[in-house]
Amino acid sequence: QVQLTEAGGGLVQPGESLRLSCVVFGPTSEQYPMGWFRQPPGKDREFVSAISWPAATTYYSDSVKGRFTISRDITQNTVYLRMNSLKPEDTAVYYCAAQFSFNLATITRLDGYTYWGQGTPVTVST
Image 1 (cartoon, one colour):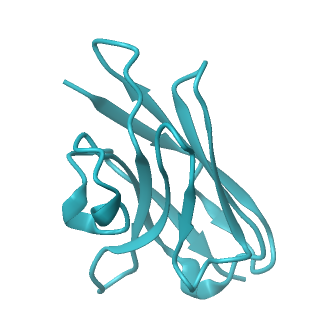
Image 2 (cartoon, rainbow, N blue to C red):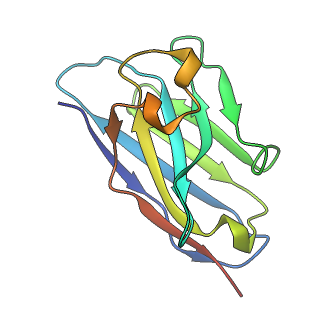
């Protein structure tokens, strides 16, 4: 069974940066396509970013494109989300997810992922 643990969330002011991390724990060293999703208060969970495997192609929602960067450290089994120029509308609980199916057609969709972390909250406010 694959387990994901997010970290790095917190309270920041608009314009500041934050880096989230997601450590993947599994019975083997198998790598998966990985995604980041977020759920703003009172809203549905939405796609943020993803990185494929093994090609490492990156994907971003229009709302974060140019501000957020997804990356991975294979040696540490960790996926990162660097968030720059944060806005109040970025406030949400952020979740990482692993796509066991290796399906590029669903790499930006919530229903395309098999394993999910518990989430880490991010609040952007003065």
